[in-house]
Structure formats: structure tokens, C-alpha cells
Image (cartoon, rainbow, N blue to C red; front, side, top):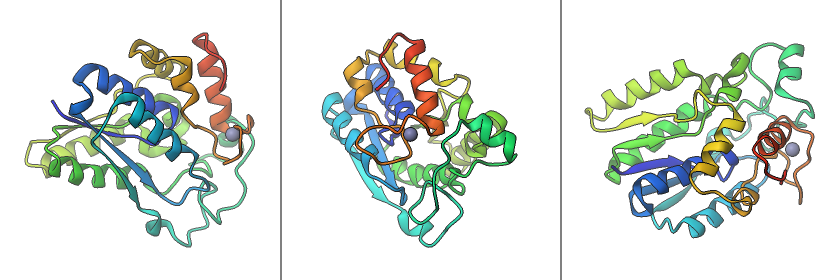
Length: 226
Ligand SMILES: [Zn+2]
């Protein structure tokens, strides 16, 4: 088994990286990081730290920001306006549909690119870190079970039945993902080298949707918020 992991340097995909290395060994893991024009590079710094920590030599950092150049409809992207300082549930209560930090078909785009790179690197599995909290209320429709099953089928067919795709966290909430990370051997220091906050400050803002989720998930597992 050789697995390509889509890894942002965020919490969820870093837990997935640790699980992949524990199960298959670092030499059988290919990590793909994608820059898409987000407002800061904090996640990428964490991604590189984790490569070193886990001894992953097969990795690539890809720049797909040109796809989103000029788009103003997403607050995660440069030029996209201010990021809301409230939970996803509060945002969805005000305005049903996708949240303002939804990046148009981001995971569909990334998984298509990942499939091509996986085949070129003789991987037979792609993992990505979508979890149930992201899919809740359809806040991020490219994180739902339906989406994962559809993409998985497309990749299986389009690769000539050589490449599988799974979202191992799709049935877990963020606290469940952290628990899996701990099971895979992650320490407090490892969690400190993940970045969730949508803002790019020196420290996490503590107020955006993902900061709120992260704090709850870490503390539910007896870890310090970081
Ligand atoms: Zn934040």
C-alpha cells in the first residue's frame, strides 16, 4: 500500500498523516500540500515541520492560487473580505447554504490533482481529512459522505481501477479526529505544530469558526488549546 495524503498543515489532515505513517511507514506515504491563495502561509510552515518530524521524504507543495485569482466570494482568500468571528452553526443560522469560508469546489479540485499525482507516483490510495463537523448543515458540501463516495467512484473509474480514495474521518467530529491522532502517537508538541485559524496572526485569533472547533476538540481529549 502506498498512500497519498492531502495535507494542509491543519489539524485534521495532520492527524491523518500520522495515521498513514503509523500504518504504512513513512516511505509509503506521499504528502501533497496545495496553496490556493489563502491569506497566510502559517499552515505550510506546519506542513514542512511535520514532514521533518515524520521523516516523510516524498512530498510536494503545489501552487493552485491562479484558479481563484480575482474571486471575491470567499473570505478565506486574498481580497475576499473579513472572516466571520462566529461558529459555523451561528453562520448557518443567519444564512443557510455554504459558509463564507467555503472555497468553490476546493476539495474536488484538490482530489482531481491528487489523483493524477498519485498515479504518477504509483500510489494506490488517496486520503483526505474531511470530517463530519465540516459536512454538518452542508457548510462545506465538498466534505459530505455523498461527495466523498462520488469522487471516490470517479477516481476509481478514471484511474482504470488502480486508485482508491477515502475520507477516513468522514464519520468523526473534530474531537474524534484528535483522539485518532493521539492513537497514532501524536503528542502535545505535534498538535502545536498544526494551524487551524483562518487569520494569519502570530497566535490563533480564538474567535473564528475553526478556532472555536479546535479548542473544543483539543480540550475534550485532555490537551491544552494551542
Ligand atoms: Zn481563528
